[in-house]
Length: 313
Image 1 (tube, rainbow, N blue to C red):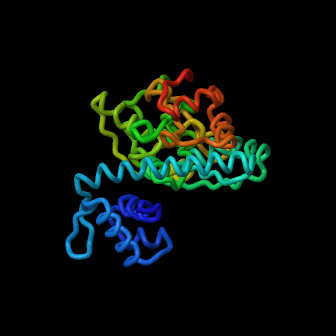
Image 2 (tube, helix red, strand yellow):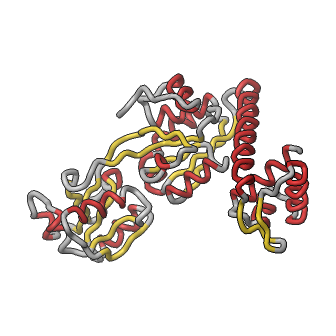
Image 3 (spheres, helix red, strand yellow):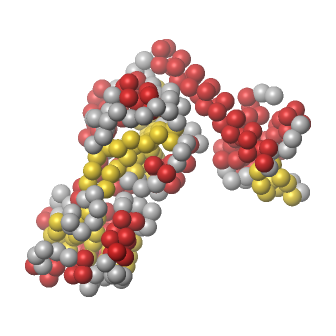
């Protein structure tokens, strides 16, 4: 049994049993991956994967337990490497943050600027995707941190902490009839087509629940992944928009009016997550603290080790 075999098995599981994709990710050949996994199975005395011909079609019961153990081993090894790098190259390294478009566009610029000023020798990489994709990137070791409003708290493999609170706002073209409705109501909003986020992004589930609880079913004219696209189509008259409050700082310049909707939709909390049990390098801790100032290095360490949080927002 060797480390290469463990990595190959883990990558196959991570790639949905697609050996070809695993081989590409591992920079090796498909036959080589299959041979190494077979050798691992022979040493363990059980099959990790069910096969149909040469294809892997499912994970066996034994494979589920073994793969969980492999993940722990690989995480421990990654932690050891991180500890070594921390002491050998303090203030230098790589940090990959998986983030939604809205967070990258509106929430992170100040954080990234401050971080790069403090750690100019750290190579920072931002990966974008849906909240569930971001969670899987961290779980799979392809990202160190994830930042999103949806999904992150639902993965037991992750430690998620609150970053900041925000509300949705309704955006309309300047002079739109809704701007004269005081107070703004869901019933008034539902009379118009709605342009808002894709169902998996930026608090969309809370928007849907708010309308459902009032027995309303507004026409969803268009959904998009980011606020800028939504605002563009609102400005074109396609409908009224529901977006994050952080996205409307320049609403007047864009020919839009931002209408307060904090009383219509529940408060949202954007969260930051990292893999449970991960060793957080010093610059990673500082990035977390820049994003979530109420945290402390000691509190983050306790959380990574499975302890309870001692902070809130």
